[in-house]
Amino acid sequence: MNRAVAIGALLAIVLTAAPLGAQTGAAPDFSNIEIHSLHVQGNVWMIVGGPFNAAVSIGNDGVLVVDTMVEPLADKFLAEIRKLAGDKPIRYVINTHFHADHTGGNAKVIPAGQSIVAGNFAAQVGAAAANQANVIAHENTQIRMMSDLKPAPPFIAMPTDTFFTDYKDLFFNGEAIQILHQPSAHTDGDVIVFFRKSDVIVAGDVYMNTTFPIVQIDQGGSYQGIIDALNRIIDLTVPAEKQEGGTYVIPGHGRLADEADVVEYRDMNTILRDRFLDAIKKGMTLEQVKAGRMVRDYEGRYGATSGFWTTDNFVEAVYYSLSHPAKKASQVR
Amino acid sequence: MNVPNRIVAAAIVMAAALAAPGRADAQIDFNGVWAPIFHEDQPERVPGPDIGDYAGLPINDAARLKADTWDASILTLPEHQCKPHPSTYGFRGVGNLRIWFDFDDATQRLIKINTQIQWMEQKREIWMDGRPHPPDYAAHTWQGFSTGHWEGPVLVVNTTHLKVGWMRRNGLALSDRATMEERFIRHGDLLTHIFMITDPVYLTEPLVKSNGFRLTTNGVVEPYPCESVDEIVREKGVVPSHLPGTNQASEEFAAKHHLAVEGVKGGAATALPEFAKKAAAP
Image 1 (tube, each protein chain N blue to C red):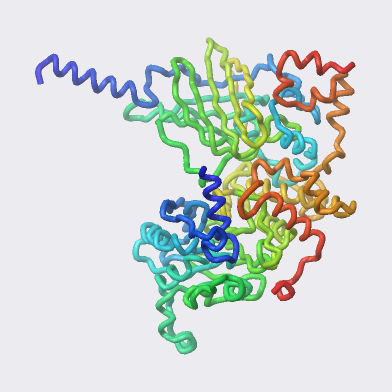
Image 2 (image 1 turned 45 degrees about the vertical axis):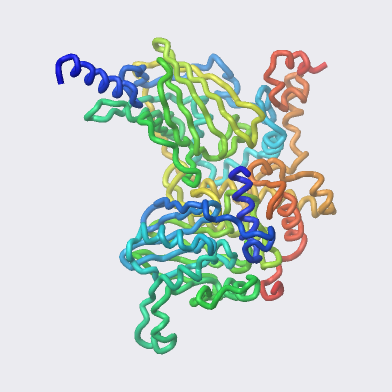
């Protein structure tokens, strides 16, 4: 099995709500996956384990973790955080959405953290809450972790600090951090995390440079929502010089990127959206669209003929998504 | 250690030093400002290629569709205006090329060869110290990550980690999986640059081209500031493109030059001399 196929097989298992091993009958082998870290800039590090990405902010206030990879890699992931941060406490975990490749390590990473609990907050949540990190997520992420993940994660893995508005912000390690909800994109609970002083965005799965966008329509996602999220990232990023560097973007999967990379991906999806809308307007059926292979100019880079998210899966999702008005999360659940 | 042994030891040290990357004796001096000469492909490189002209390039069907649906108006989007040429194209351009070597102070070993091409300040580093290329999760850049070594008097450069780029300025794209191998060969005041691009996404076989430069004694490389602006009032989120099948540029180009459309549509076969007979329109 070559590396691309192996990564595809791993992703096939974890990008759904299914438990590990449910699709193949056997749990995948994570033992050979090594964890690596890359200092992006400022406080922020990108952590990579095979096809899985996460990020940490490390500074005087402690450690803030964005996504926790998959459960089988949690011990290695924690070891990498300790290598980078020493004994600084993990104060926060942010989940960009509910999928098991972004929340799977929660059950080990959260109790490895410590919160500052005092005053009336202690009275509300109890002093024991100090023995874990605060976990921030959009409320749709929390709801889907309880309702869509099978089996449901243990209580300790659940978000403790949810929000239902457009954004949430906090100040940590000397910088403002914006947690921006992207409604109906990859799922209905996606957030992108913007470290304003470090000038780094952690995009979650609204931006992946490994595949065509994964539009989870049954989980509240939509193709236009993904394009909207990409445009929002482009609004936030500022290149340093000659459309390069400046704000960096850590994708949900794939290599470190900057604005130009997101622009390329946004352009592709906007161009493909316009082709699909034209085809739908002309009354073409899904089968006719598939036969027309209208995504073939990008297929060699982002497509797949096997695995969880094939080119056909993408075409079907886009056709359906653009043929139907976006459903609100409450309608989907 | 007696005298003969000391000689042996010195020889071993010298041999090790000479075998190390960036050794001084193999270097050919490329320092200076080089002006491009356009003995090859001048119409394509200076005024620019015609839209729809893909002749002679080993492109696949995906590259052809991407170019057919490319609309030059996309370059008016603010986020496209300040893109420099990637290293896979920059040496084809019209600006002067400055080359300078960086040496380690203590050892006088060659650490890095720098190049800068005027248009959009295409700044490039070619590492000569034997360092590895970055991991696959590292960021890609317009110029990519380049390492070099000497093969006799020839500088050989390998480049990875490129951004999505282009092979012609008419929408013919290269993917971010493209890699490039180059040869820099000096003949007196002339510099020959040969490059071979491999791209599993858009090429069926390596694209091989050469460029010439002449050393100048008074050459300059001017600064090239760029600030993007809104050139056209558009609705937010618009990305100009042609729908598949609606762009007749190749047909128009073929008709204008009395060529067969099959020829201007490109593909590896169109680079072969025998194709010229077929390409001539009846």
